[in-house]
Image (cartoon, rainbow, N blue to C red; front, side, top):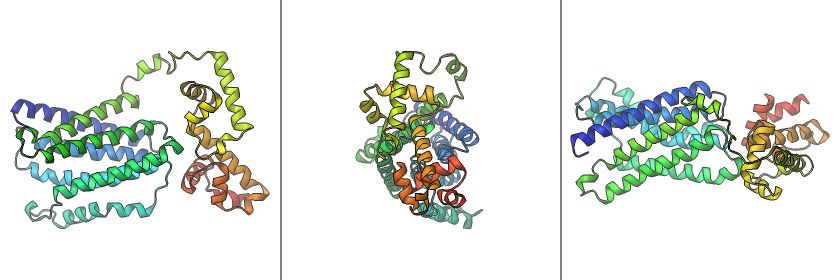
Length: 349
């Protein structure tokens, strides 16, 4: 980046963002082990933090020749990042981890294998993936991850930390790709020479700041002092009425058996505000909307598997009748609730 002052600023912002990403990734890995997709989210932050740290060092005014050795880490991180983003979107929206997905990591495996073969040798002897090929690789995985999230968002409504991270992570990647387009479209403009690392550094810095604020690791005391719905206009009487309507919709109308049911549609059908319905679910049921639906659907599946129909129905049929939109989502929710797969539960019955 032109100017030593601007270059130093980029270095500082990049390093702060990298450290925040590494710390947040480690914290998520430590605190979210049981949550589907939690490990992948932590891994994403570790990969992103490592890559941003290398960018920071390579653009530092005091960068030396040894920084080129660190570029090995940067390439490794970026080759693993795209498939990991895809795995994370898959898991956060209810998909099960499948060994077939490991095939997406083939380029990264080849690259890391080459590194192991050249361990201790000259860096110049390595085959380096072309930078445009690496960018295209990242764009491809951003596109398929976005498509996956768009297809599954309304049906699964990722909850907890994933509601924020799935969208925020894609937003950062889109900003990075936009900066890459600008850089290569106006390659002759010297002022845009470092627009890509600058955009990546600032975007990752903002992502990790928001991540820390939402994680509860910072400002936890202030959050405890101010209840989540302190400013809500929902009265106790109105909340009770909404709860009665909701229970009627679940117990009598069996709305949870609709595979495409969303919070917005249910709120419209009940004639209540989406925010008020969400508040009632959080306060009266102590879960989120998706968790409530999954609990109701698992109970329906258990009823089917315990009854005479259970022996005749396939697992796919039980999943469909229980309101799940996929076999993988059904298996994940059922095993988390009962400690058994549906087939194991049926055999026990």
